[in-house]
Length: 313
Image 1 (cartoon, rainbow, N blue to C red):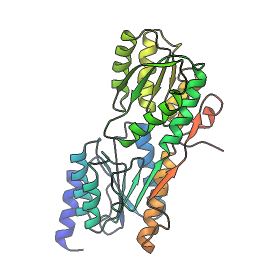
Image 2 (image 1 turned 120 degrees about the vertical axis):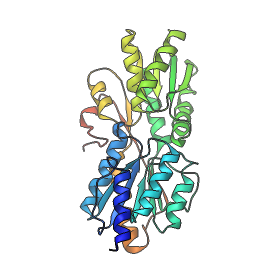
Image 3 (image 1 turned 135 degrees about the horizontal axis):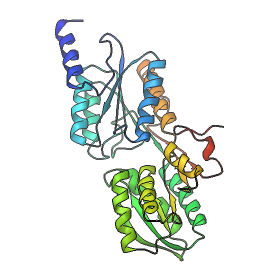
Image 4 (image 1 turned 45 degrees about the vertical axis):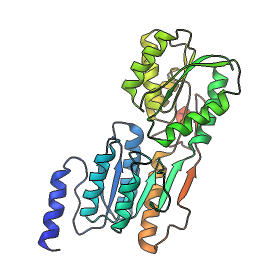
């Protein structure tokens, strides 16, 4: 390897110190770019992808875009400059991420998307996402059942730039709206955030003290909502989430949150790496670009079998 190449890779390592695992410049490397691992779902993705990549003999560069499309673009520049072989991406916006993925493609680096789609096809090699609509319907059916098919409820919606937020909300309403005695009295985004969900839930409850149920677009928002309800002495309110996190599993087992929907983050990320490996070796994944993975309802009946976004058989 020439000196210029060594210096470039060293500069990338310094610029991104703390954001990725250092790798040998001579090895084939896969970049894994996700939102913040502070959210256990995204951590499971990164961990699953890294474990599979290392198992297949790759070095790993793990990067975090914090749902910032500009930062994501810079990370793509760094990954391209480092000469990675492939990119595993949970993107920072359906529209805003197209240019970054195209940039990598133009540089001869294939991208394999997980969890969130982009609004273009033929740019990424794979887009592997949970069947959010199917999962949301499962969650909504359980929510309606837990509510006894009646009562005032609130909805916490995810980040508006994320297509999953809209898909899940539509899946919820296509079920709940069939029940005339279910009345939504509040609906607001909490941007996938536990802290923001706590604050939003406090305001919703003050304005609508008759709320008897809360359905959230993800588990972190469900946890924030439940904490606010608990602080207000309203543990009687039915709360349901979406993701299948260990935190919500523990809450379900303790009689707190009542249900969630598992999307297999760890397995999904590993599948993306397997497809990247096959593509790099053969020029094809052998499957369609867009792939859906069905979700599974988690409640008191099966919560004990849930571990790190995977359900034991």
